[in-house]
Length: 343
View: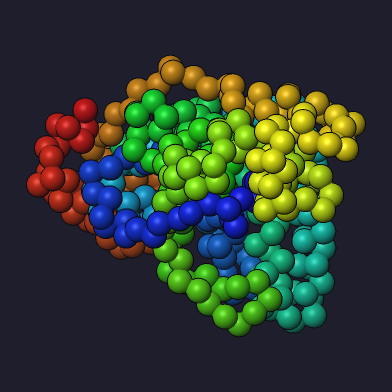
C-alpha cells in the first residue's frame, strides 16, 4: 500500500543521465513487483521459460539495471527480511486483493476482453521464493551488490542513504521518508510511458527526487511529526488510518496539536495498536550495518548461460544489454576510475 503523502511533498524531476557516478539503494521487492506487474503479454500472461517458471522479474532486473549502469549509476538492491508483526493485516489485505483480481482476470480472459484482463493480471503478481533466489543469482553474475535486510527492505535502503553509504534511496513508496531517507528517488525502475488506470491516456514517467529536509521545511514539521501524519493517513501497519482524514487534514491536525496524543477526540482505541508501536517501527527500524558494497565486473558468460540456457532468454538481446553495461563502465572510467567504482 505505502503511505499516501503525494499531495504534501515537493518533488524535483531529474534525468537519470545526470546522476552518473551516484549510488542508489533500490528497494528490491518494490522493483521486482513492478517488473512482474508490467512485463506481461497483451493478455496479461507473464513472461515464462519452457518449464513454466515466470521470468518477467529477471527481464526487468537485467534490462533496467543495464540502463542504470549504462548511465554510470551504481545500484545496490535491498531485499526484505521478516516483516514486522503489525504488517500482518496489510499482508492479508493484499492477498485478498490479488485473489479478487485473479477471479476477475479469468472472467475477462474467458469473455475475450483482453485489455481488461491485462489490467486485472497486473494486480495478481506474487513474488515467489524462486524468483527472489533467481534475482540474487543474476545480481551476483552482474557484479551488482545486494543486501538482505533483517526486516523491511525499504527501512534498510533508507538506512544506507542516511549513513551516506549510498547517495539515494529508490522506491515508489513514500514510506522511505518516514524511515528517514534523506533523498528519495522515484521512478528509477520504471521508464517510458504509463497508462492511466481506466483511461486511454498515457503519461510520461520521469524520475523525481524528494528531499526529506525540504519536505520538513516546507511543511514546518519534524521527522516524528511526519511519521504521525503517516499514521493518521494509514501505513502498512495500520492500513485504514483514521476515517475521513487525508494528508492535508492530517498535516493540519499534527501541526496544530503537536502530536497524535494531543489531538482532541482521538483515542488510542481508534488505532489497531498503540500509535507509539507504529511510530517505533519508522523511527527505530530493524536494520543492519553488516554489509559490504562492492561492485564487480560482470561475468558475461555466466549471465548468458543462466538466462539463455536455463531461462530461455534471447542471447542476442542479453548480449546487447551486456554491451550497454560495458559502455557504462567506460563512461564511469572517464568520470572517476574503475578502481573507485569497483572498490
